[in-house]
Image 1 (cartoon, rainbow, N blue to C red):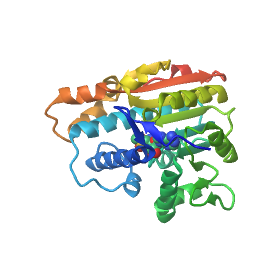
Image 2 (spheres, helix red, strand yellow):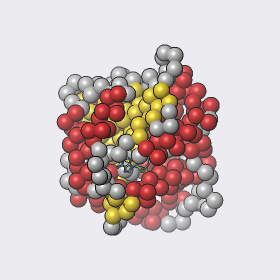
Image 3 (cartoon, protein in one colour):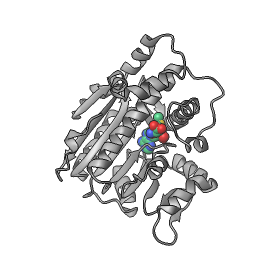
Image 4 (cartoon, rainbow, N blue to C red):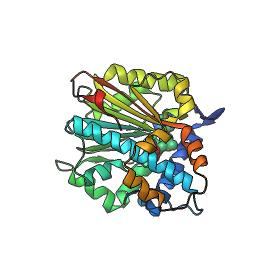
Length: 294
Ligand SMILES: C[S@@+](CC[C@H](N)C(=O)[O-])C[C@H]1O[C@@H](n2cnc3c(N)ncnc32)[C@H](O)[C@@H]1O
């Protein structure tokens, strides 16, 4: 079966899947740079991304800080509401390290799934295999003797990496069910800068599939504001990143603002206005998910 080999760039014409996959390195390098500068703590990102050779503008790091903090706070609110009796599906996870950070804080959900293109999944698994500080926490959270880890997939009790294309929903659902997906469990789906790289018909189909399959769910989406609004998403909440930044704890914002001098605050605001964080919920189990906010 032929699969479209192009996705759409947020700013223009269609781009190749290869170019989309490379966005994962850009995201992890920007995160690593900001972590090195002290914006937030993440002892794991260094294993997945090279330290960028060039200095990054403070606007970039502050933007990433607001993105990572905003998403993390929503994730933690969901884990609290569900008492961690839930699953998380990180769509287009790239080299994201949230699984390890949640494990360190004793906040793991029942199971944490990551989906990305097979080549990205293979790379991530290879890195995990070669770094005990990444593989050890997976083993510690695993009950039973051994778990599946081959070059394309990893499936342990609490963590799974699945190489799949988010445009092939039947295959994706099958693969996740093989790894123990339970659609009846409260489910948090997150897409951090991912839907924007898919053609609207594909991202619409993905969102419809989520709404059909999971009766109790939350969807967290971070992406370009213009594209997001154009697609008529009816999330319960949407905040542009200036609003997100202003909603973060003032003492932490003060701390990161002291890290690097920023000449033009207006430029940062202009940049952040192009992006938004949105989240939508479905609450068949009446867990209070509608109340979740930043
Ligand atoms: C900008 S990166 C973001 C990575 C990660 N969410 C983060 O914020 O660090 C976008 C990711 O989405 C993945 N992606 C985009 N379209 C996809 C698709 N159709 N199927 C699977 N993964 C996809 C890319 O491979 C890439 O890893």
